[in-house]
Every structure is written in structure tokens, then in C-alpha cells.
Amino acid sequence: MTTTFQALNKGNVKAHTKAIKDQGISCSRPDGLRVSLKALYIRPEWNIRDIDTDHVNQLKNAFSNSTTPAPFKVQPCLVNNEERFAILGGHHTYVAISELIAEGKVFTENSLFDADAVFPKNEAEAVMIAFNHNQGKAMTVIQNARVFKRLQDEGMTLIEIVNKTGHAKSVICNSVKLLEGDDELIQLVEDNKISATRARNFINQHGTEKATQYALADIGLRTQPVSQESVNTETVDSDNNQPTRLAAKDHTQTVVTRTRGGLREKNLSKGKIDEMESLIKYISTRLDAEGNIHLPDAMVAKINSLSEAISKKDDHNARALEAQNALNN
Image (cartoon, rainbow, N blue to C red; front, top):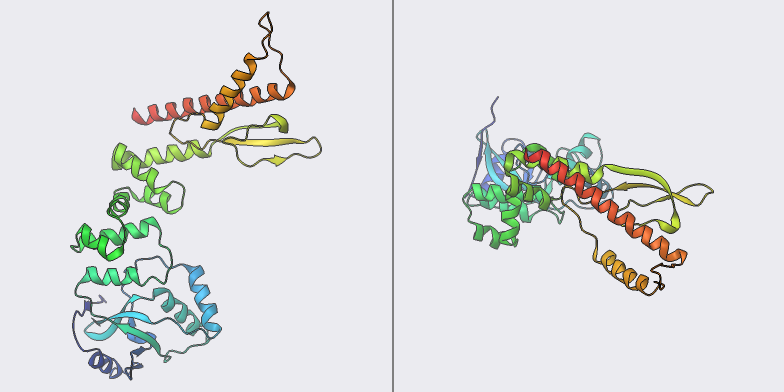
């Protein structure tokens, strides 16, 4: 059976509540609206944030320890022509209470909960109410992007979205740009395998169709093991290395080097360049009349360390260039 839904943009909350009670559903309006879960309706996939099971469990624990659920933010509506209150804010609370009722704990089907009824003038305003009724929980960049896009699709201008959400124009535009990526690229951002900025740059530079290929190549270069060997701890260069693990007895470290530059070509850090300049100046003072250089062991170790850093940089850049050429062909 197809469910019909109609959001109400105006009306009388008291009369709406009475109509729900007349259907045999627990609901009251003494000095404030109180509703049972049966009086509430969740629009499929309307929530601006995916249900976080950890947050639901936190709420269940809190409610089990006598914490009163926060009021629902609801909109009067008709579901199959019967009066209900559509949830705009409080989806996690609804899930937590539902699970507790199913478990026979704390609440029953007739338990009443505080609710604040509003009449958004349009769908954009309803989404905005939900966005601002998010219980202080941080949303991901993709979740924000979807909210901004929904507001745009509902006819809100960029300036209106800025004024309503408090986010800068650049944040809104950059976020929405991510949604031009395919499902795989969006999931990579959601899984924190690539930054939103990096993903957006690939969309801008290479277009929607190739952005995911570049992202995957970038991730591959940043996570690919380059070498695995035992090295003396006195000559290890920690730049661009993963944390090291001491080997047993011999005081050496097993190092698995992983690059962090992705497809970007790398340069030596300012610290390394300064170290090289300092080293050259020092070497010039150690030249004898015949052009031979006499250096202490510590300085030789430093030279070896710098040489290793340069080799790593050159090796990464060669692989990055090879990957870029393959993607461009």
C-alpha cells in the first residue's frame, strides 16, 4: 500500500491533537503538546543525518537512568489522510525510545513525550528547522552538503542559506560541489579515506567522470608500502615515516615507509633545506688544503639521513608522475 503524506503549513495544533486522540492514540495538549510514539510519523529517508547507533545507545542509557528525552520538533501532517505529527528533529530519540519499548524497558506504547509543534511555510524551512535542531551533534561534510543541496532545490538562494545556517558562502558552495562526484568518491570522503578538499579539487581539475580514478590513485600512493628494512636508530630520518617499532635486542627499528603526498609531487621541507644549507657551510670549514673533507661520525650520519630524505622525495615524485601520466592517457 502506498503511503500518502501531506505536510500542513497552517492549522490549529489543539484541534489536530484532538483528532489524533479520537483515533485512539495517546496524545494530549494541557499546557504543552505531549505525544506517544504512535502519534509521530517519520518520513522515509527524510532525516538529514544517518542514524548513529552509538548515539542511540547513549540516549537509551540516559533514558534508563531517568533522563527525560528532549522535546521532539514536529510538524502537523496528514498520513493517508489521518492526522499525525511528522518528526523534524528527534529521530535518534525516536529510535532510542522505540528500542526501549520493544525491550520492555522504561517506556510503554502509551508513554507521552514533550513535543514542539511548528508550521514551516515550505519544505526548505522544514529542512532548516531540522538542521538547527541537531542536538549539537557534528554532521559530516557530506551530510551538510546534502542539506545545502536540498535547500537549493527547494528554492532558497545562497544568501538565504548563509543567513539561515551561519555557514560562509564558500563553505556551502564547496560542500555542494562534492555531490557532483559519483557514489564511490562520496563514500571515500565519508570514510575519511580522502579529504573533502582533495576530492573537490579532483572534480574541479579532472571532471566528475575521472575524479574517482584520481582519488583512488592518490589514496594508493599515500598508503603503498615503499620499503621494509631494519635500520640503525642513529641514522633514521623520521620525515614522512610511519611510527617505528623497536626490534628485539639489537636496538634497530623496523620501518615501513609510507608516502603522504599522494599524487602531488613533493619538495623537501624548509627544515631539511635549512639543515642542508647549515651542513654545506659546516663542510666548507672542514676542507683541507688538498680538498679532502674530514667529518665526525655524527655529521656523516646527518649527511646519510639527508641523502635518504632526498631519495624518498625523488622516488615519490617519480611514482606520482607515473600515476598522473597513466591517468592522463
